[in-house]
Length: 410
Ligand code: APR
Ligand code: PHB
Image (tube, rainbow, N blue to C red; front, side, top):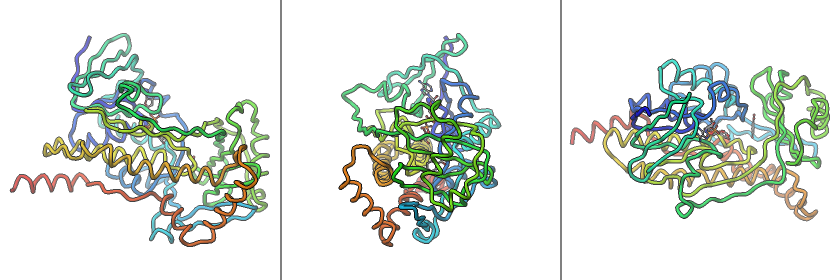
């Protein structure tokens, strides 16, 4: 058995864990990441690709924005296609100049992994039998790697280990409450090296179901189709996928669509899920370990980033001036933002997807709601303000340092 110590033990090296590690490193706080998968597996995972401005700012603060600045595509608007007609939602005009950035989560993960490698920070990949202990009082982690057993003592544990992780599962049932909604369909996603059908994302509401035209770059497209959750990816040849996508598009988009061989194809189920609270003594849950949103609102990665913004603030303030305020407030602050993003993602999902169970009346009401939103300045503003990301207050490292100096000088 090898004994290790650190200030913060981070479980999971998805975007949440990696971003937290980078922010703690910048603030001079020691940490270790423990990840059950290999580095190659983590770097290859394909996920969504829209960053809110606040997430971009946080990546900049973490010093990992070089590729993002070079290859990220700033978008001022999105299109919503319904009844065969496209409606542009001018995000920037409706939100006083805010934008979103198209940049794949896979790239965010790789940039963070490279920064970590360059800084020589410690990650235990392919860790087995990871267990967290005594997190109310004297936290420590036990795990094995390459046949060697480790015990890692720490001040805090950051549970960034995703929906299936060990951290949330280790909390006694009577201390935790979860809220869940499972949708009766999934998203079939295809990645292809073809130019995107349009300069902006197109969210498609059609009688045949939802579709989304997204992109990773000017030469790489990401498309999705709503499909029954029982469908298997093998049932969807590339040809069938493109044919069905065309069926859901308007004439102009159908004409402009460039098809090609898929380089990735998968079906993801849709789920809304929230855990309350998000802190248990010295254990913090962050990102998918605490909540899941259906991808319709593009909020998954952004919510993980806002959790990490609050958590890094709380930990840095604690180590800088001994304040426990951020730690005490972590769960409440996160959940306030989480529930708003959950509501938005649920609403977008309901509005744009076809539900087998909906009556003709329900369907008409939904059409009327969509028509109202798209015709009303107030409706469009509501959509835009949520899509670009609701604002939240965090301090920069410099602000925390200057409040620390103020504290010392009094
Ligand atoms: N021990 C160690 N690591 C674990 C364990 C465990 N028991 N269980 C899971 N992990 C690892 C996973 O292998 C994964 O690399 O934790 C990591 C969690 O990463 P993500 O699932 O990417 O979660 P998170 O970092 O919160 O990122 C949230 O991912 O799913 C999207 O929409 C979501 O965009 C959002 C983002
Ligand atoms: C994506 O590009 O993968 C993407 C974009 C917007 C969404 C969901 C996924 O709402």
